[in-house]
Image 1 (cartoon, rainbow, N blue to C red):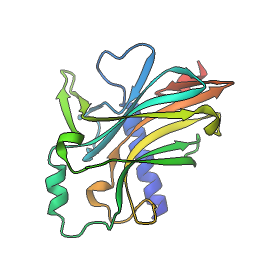
Image 2: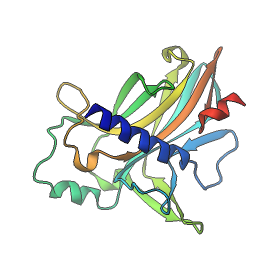
Image 3: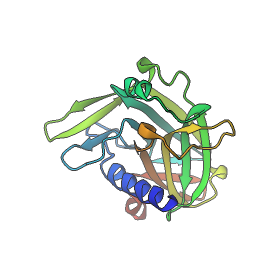
Length: 205
């Protein structure tokens, strides 16, 4: 089962990181992921989405704006299930991973009133080239002191998760809480500066 989860995670990352950059007028000093996808090529279209935006170069601490939510119909679909995971909290997980996908650290931020559609709805605007741009109702400012990041290169991802009463992520029998479009950014730390990029190869430039 762990192998299947790892394969699915890699598939989602390869799809949504590659197509993550928004079609909008992004500020040149910033990089973002998770705001757009191309329906002609992306076969997976999950209910849940996250996105992330950050200034490319920062010092002493990393400030990221994380976005999270779901598409129209998610709440009705969730309510229609007779059997649901026995969860305690709905959270936004920030995961720091190294270059070979080992989890280095995880932090969890509560998503209050998660099933209130007015607070978490994600809408899509179709572009002329066949892609869609996502607009999120909910966003969260996440600040990480650089001395808390223990690796020099890796990536930061945001995911919506269910936690049980022991504050452990529920991974089995998730239904529509399983697959998710994730916003992820690669980073490298040099001295007291962090650099973010959409692609890992861009950090070598």
